[in-house]
Length: 219
Image 1: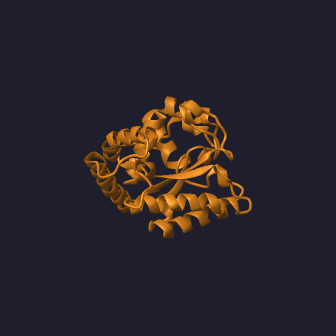
Image 2 (image 1 turned 30 degrees about the vertical axis):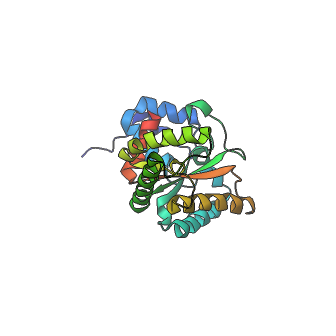
Image 3 (image 1 turned 90 degrees about the vertical axis):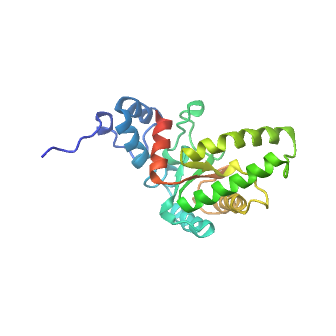
């Protein structure tokens, strides 16, 4: 019989909300095994830093969103700087979560992922055929970029809510966008709750897709 094998950089990583530099160093030194562990535990489970003083609010958010979007509450989580308390993004490394931060929601749901994928395809056809047009050059540039990137993201098992315009023709996206606006407004009037600038959703097709993408980001 052999003991459980643990990547050495993780042995002393005992903080619930470790510093971003510590996380990235563990990911670098520990290789794929460490990155997977970081994605599964520190970056997806437990009470996010932004809700450490009000865990019940976090659970209330998940319960409310589960009804709003018809997904299970356990499929809903928080990523980004709200998870550890500071950003892991290279261009914002160490920036603390605050009132100017976004609340990055992730949802692991094959059914919602499929619905968003189908809606993206509908929008892509409408855009390419000229059935729908952007309101200005800047928006048109974003749409062209999203239209090109979408299939690549689907092949990796995730999609961002903002990949499809918030228009009546695309009800799933519109429902998510409306939910994110309401979420921010409800947090604003909830005692002890964080007050993010805005909120958005990234949907994954499976937990394997989530772990794979987070591990890739850490790499």
